[in-house]
Length: 145
Image 1 (cartoon, rainbow, N blue to C red):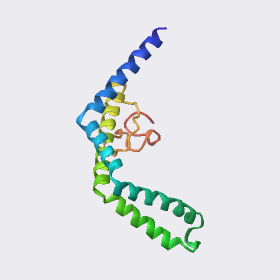
Image 2: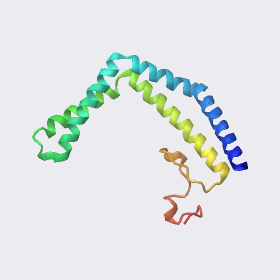
Image 3: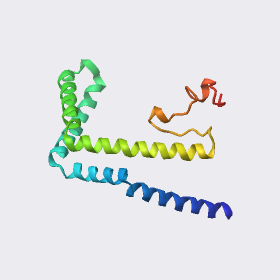
Image 4: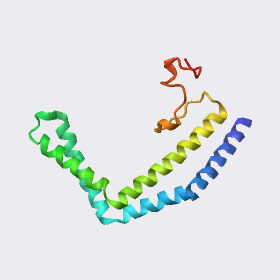
C-alpha cells in the first residue's frame, strides 16, 4: 500500500511540474505559436499540400527511380517542404517546439541523473547524451560496459 501512495504522490508532483512547464514562458510561447500556425490559412494550405504530396511520394518510393513520375514527384515534394518550412508562422512554431523540447530534455536529464548518474535519459539532443561515448555496449568510462 505504501508504494501505491508514493506512486500517487509522484504522479501528482508530475502533474504540477507539467502545469508549471505549460505556464512557463517557453510553454506559453509554444502554445501561442501553435495556435497562430493553426489559424494561419496560408500555413495550413502549405501543410495540407505537403501532406497530400507525401502520399504520392510514398507510392513513387515503392518503385524508386524506375517509377515514371519519380523525378516530378520528388521535386514537387522538396519544393512543397521548402515552401512549408520557410513560412513565418511555421518557422515560429518549429522554433518554439525546439525550445520546449530543449527544456524537456534538460528536465529529463536532471531527473534521471538525480536518481543515478548511470540512468540513460532518452533525448534527441546530443548535448544531453551521457558521457558514455557510444552507448553501454562501447565499454566506455561510464561503467556501463
